[in-house]
Structures are given as C-alpha cells and as structure tokens.
Amino acid sequence: MQRKILTFIVHEKKILALYSEPHPQHGKGGWFVVTGSVEKNEDFEEAVSREVMEETGLVVEKIFPLNWGSVYNWRNEVCEEHNFVSFVNSKKVTLNEEHSKYEWLDIDKFIEIIKWDDNKELLGKVLKKALNKRIHFRNFTIKDYRKEKNE
Image (cartoon, rainbow, N blue to C red; front, side):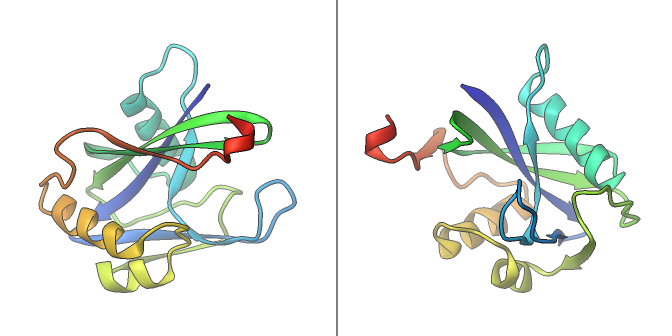
C-alpha cells in the first residue's frame, strides 16, 4: 500500500489553494492542496514538511494531524492518505511545476472552489476547528473509496 499525505496550508486563518492545469497524468486540473507520497524511511509528518517545501517553498512551523484520511485506488495501486493542516509563518509562495497559480483564501471561499469529491460541509467543519487547533475526529477516521470489485 502506498502511503500518501494531503495537507491544508494555513497562514493567519487563510488557506492556500493551488491551481493545477489539466494534465494527462494528473487529471482534469482545478484548485487543490498539497498532496504527495511518503518516501521510504519517512513518517507522515516528515512527508508533509517535505511536500509543502517542494510544492510551495514554504517552511512548515506546526503540523496538526486531522485524524482523518482515505483509502483509494490510483494507477493500479492502493493508497492510504492521511490529512493534516500545516501552519506556516509566511505567505510568500514559490510554486513548482505542479501548479500554475495560487490564492490565500478565507475558509468559505476555499471550500467553495477546492476540488473535493466528498462532503464539503464536513470539510468545512473539520477545517474550522483545525484553524483553532481543535480536532473534529476524536478517533482516526478513514474513508474507503475503493470500488468493491477492486478490493
């Protein structure tokens, strides 16, 4: 199983949205957050810091685990993705080749534009608590998106 991370980047209660152009290997494009694979000999939080630096040039000051994740199939591989919030002390973003533009948004606008295939109302509740460093899920909650035929 491929271990993955997804992190929402926060600076002074604003959330960073990253825009990706449509790409044959990555899909339709749209507004996203930082995601990536956990490398060998790396834990989830180390992967969060590394991926944030690689994709945005930002240094993570504090990582807040959301106790929330998903399992899904991607390119014939099963992935387990854990979700985090990364607090940063700068708004100066340096994009890599994965994204073409970015915006720092208040939570309502962020929820409106972000590409999120699940319940956006739940996402809003989770993020509103996380912005105040409060946890929504007391126990780790993981949603399985794999189709039954692929299990």
